[in-house]
Image (spheres, rainbow, N blue to C red):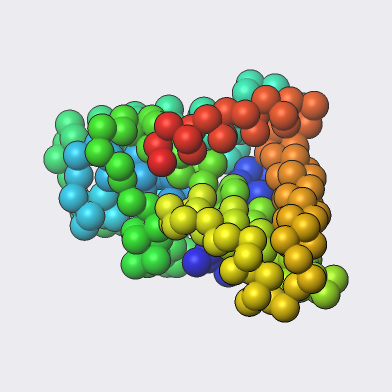
Length: 246
């Protein structure tokens, strides 16, 4: 389950610019949303570097509060210098080296006193596959978070448009196999379950939602880039990362 304010795109330069240059209220809200968005990717990196669940959560908390919020990491972000998650990953690696060097395990909070927490749903969602490097885990979770957000957006739009049955077909044939490793439901099962005319109707419904998913994924990925024309290459990287880590 996604955090309620996670949004549908993993990096949004407009939101980063708001965090940097918006008024106090808008900036604080943008910072909170961005910090929550990057919890899963940061935690995946830390967890896969050999820390147990509790230490990884503690280090993730420290990085978000001390570096992302406390040191205004977003003020260093510039689309002309490359992807924000590259800056984030480099900063995270430096932070872990600092923490290791000084062996400081004390939790810190931002000056506002607010503490962004990593709840059990995040830690369950971020299962670390054996043999995956921290960098691979980070990129996998980044892509997985983006894809989950897109899927939720497509689901809401299907429901709003009266395409609930279309979504069920897509979920049963694509989403659940992709996210949970389940065997795709047969078309015959879906025909009987949804009272459809035949297998051909079910297949056409699947194609309809696949196209919606592809368009939405392209649009949301484009929002994470300074050059939206690179969206198709970014999508290829995301899908390759998901495939390698699945």
